[in-house]
Amino acid sequence: MSKKIAEEVLFFIENDFVKHTENVVSVALALADVFHIENKKDLVEAAVFHDFGKIVMIDRLAKKGPLSREDRMVVSMHPNFSLALTKDYITADAGVLILLHHSYADGSGYPKIIAGKEIALQILQASDLYDALNSQRVYRRKTVDGWESIVAQKIQNTDIVNALINISQQKMEFPERYEVPKVVKKRIEHYVNVFV
Ligand SMILES: [Fe+2]
Ligand SMILES: [Fe+2]
Image (tube, rainbow, N blue to C red):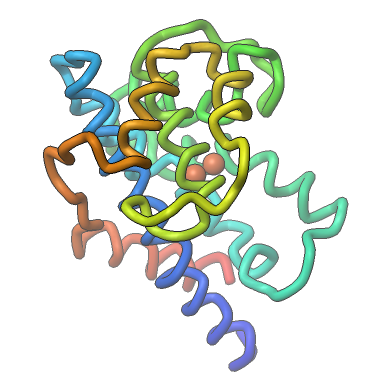
């Protein structure tokens, strides 16, 4: 790995990858409370590892400038890689959530499986979209006008969208602010060394 790529990868992991993961888990936990999800274990595992497969392609993602067509094609396989890299230490249900986190109820996304309206999956998808469309931190102002209608279209659950609006307006208490544990960071470093 060249020094430049190593620096880009490191910057990306710290400033995007880890923070995005922490935001998605935090939002998912808040939504899980609203929708009275009793077993949060699968949802949290899935939220922690949903983008883990991006490590396989992290040099493409970390480089400056827009993604090429080939980059986008590779990126569209990250849910499959996330599942492949984590399936031995997560539950089967968490694995399904990971595989389907970009397969939306309106038929858009990837892999091309039209997901059902299972609440845990919709919470994961909504938390992920919310953070992806708001490039700053969860608690700060939104940066994409119309993120609400994008999420509503894809998720097709207005109750979840309304809960996200409450989060964005800080009307909702966060049960906990999630931090990626050291053991997961170690695993990220391990795979970066393997794949980059
Ligand atoms: Fe993803
Ligand atoms: Fe994500």
